[in-house]
Image 1 (cartoon, rainbow, N blue to C red):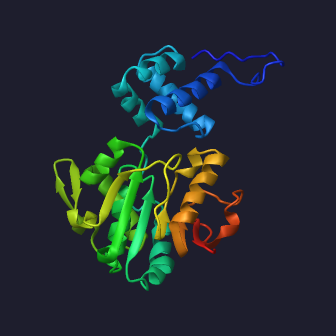
Image 2: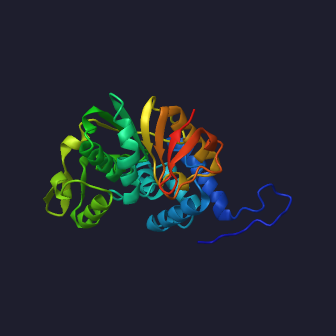
Image 3: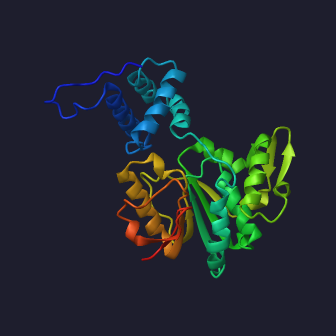
Amino acid sequence: MQQKTVHSPEQPHAHMSTLDIELRLLAEAIYLRYNYDFRDYTGSSQKRRVVQAVRAFGCKSVSELQARILHDADLFMQLLQFLTIPVSEMFRDPGYYACLREEVLPILRTYPSLKVWVAGCSTGEEVYSLAILLREEGLLERTIIYATDINPVSLDKARRGVFPLARMQLYTKNYHDSGGKQAFSDYYTAAYNGALFDRSLCENVTFADHSLATDSVFSETHLISCRNVLIYFNRKLQDRALGLFHDSLCHRGFLGLGSKESIDFSEYNKHFEAVQKRERIFRKVE
């Protein structure tokens, strides 16, 4: 793909390549036409995904892709699958779940009822992992779980609760490494190439469309888990999301971000204390 750089120092965005300008215009067009806000996603990741989409759709440039999606909502929904690539696995980073089991759930057990928000739940692997964890600790029946994402295709997969059978060996290892108490196969029924998870795990789960870029808070939440999402945002959008989490949490609520995230440089850093630094699990202090 051709990338021309504007060299004129008199122009305010002279440092931007043609591709960067096209990406900014594409994000603006998506926001204006479909109300999906990707304007504050980080450059490198989003650039790579858009370039992949340009090639997949047979376009010659991002500008051509922009023109097509503006007049073709179905094509935009296909582009959305590139912009929100679902990458997840059950009990991913077992140390995170072990910390929730050992240090967070014993405190949450003291509440009569619980609200958990899985923000950016993708295709649902983390939702089912948390539901299993809560069931084994005797908390699932008194917990409401909000599972949200901006991608309707991912949410539909999450609702179905069917995951590739080929992934079960990895998920079983993750589950036991996280301190799982049963045979992992107790939670699903294998059929053909899929594993259908126990529907009772989702009886108190609400799957919903929600954007961390444009939507508002969930009130009085006791635990928010949002892993491997903020790394795709710029600082401005990271702060917005952390503000949403802060305002959504109840007094002394917990926030799990996962080992790849950081709040060190956020204005909300002072509003949280670390429960477990390595797994980036925090607790609201005010």
